[in-house]
Image (cartoon, rainbow, N blue to C red; front, side):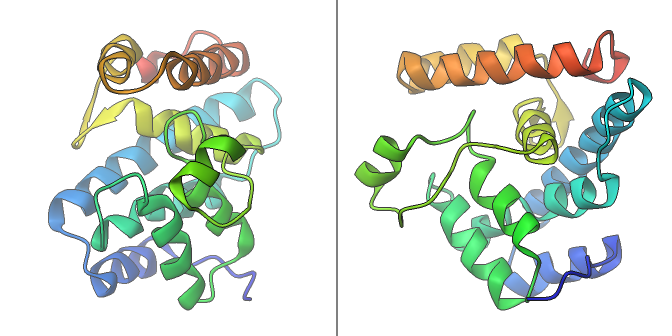
Length: 179
């Protein structure tokens, strides 16, 4: 497994080679741009974050949508990314970005391999959170995302997104990038 992260151009090429639509690529670019802003705010608040990893992980977070638009795109995406020899940290971002994370019980019910599907590192959390603030390629308030999730997901899943939001707010403070 290579530890070298691809450039933005190489990452876009990977998305295209995998069969991602223009809409998915636009979404991934919007998530990456916001995630980098959030990462920079975290860094300005004294937190050590890897902005290059955030960018690459955010650009590739939905690579699995080249094959499916179901929740399974996270696991499918990690498999696709592995075929490109991408580092484990990128694979982790891809498989852990869905919702506020997928618990072991939920993963078992989905038939996913035994693994951790809840964001663990600050970079994983930033990408997952930025994804919740982008609809299509446009920024949306977290309240809109939470309202939509509440209509589709169990309360425990919505609560994980709320906790992720609260944690990000504590890390970035008053960030104009999420308004």
